[in-house]
Length: 60
Ligand code: HEM
Image (cartoon, rainbow, N blue to C red):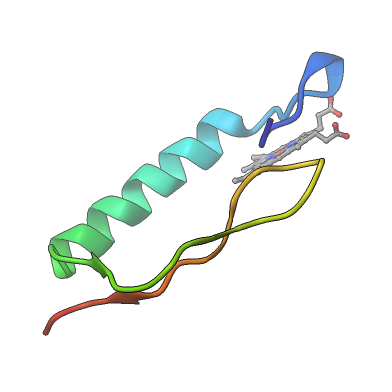
């Protein structure tokens, strides 16, 4: 759903996924432990699904 569907499906989805993979590799290399510390709130939308809020704690 996030990249659309049909003839207008996102042309950059593989670039976007590669960028996200690299981003998470860098974040997790620097902060290997990320704890979820509160309730997760989901997005209310008929168009996209996703997370609105997810409180986390990064121990230093
Ligand atoms: C997380 C990142 C991205 C998301 C969530 C996303 C999402 C989408 C969605 C939902 C559509 C369809 C829009 C519609 O149905 O009218 C779309 C179209 C498109 N996206 Fe992405 N996109 C992302 C990243 C990118 C990147 C990095 C590029 C280019 C390098 C790109 C290029 C395009 C193009 C050219 C279209 C139009 C395709 C067409 O109309 O035939 N997108 N994108």
